[in-house]
Image 1: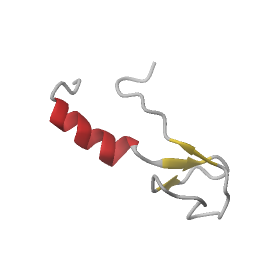
Image 2: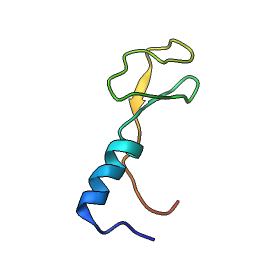
Image 3: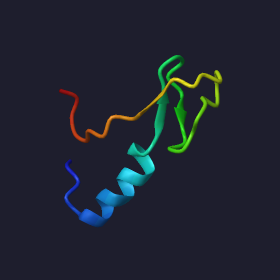
Length: 55
């Protein structure tokens, strides 16, 4: 079920998509993280911002 409400979309982006992912262990970290909370690696990337089905 797609999200059409713009206010709900902002909440979803802030809570679900606004994260950093460790390239070494795959852990989710806060958006402002400099190091991974699990393994300590500095190799972080932003989570992909795609909503919807897996295609």
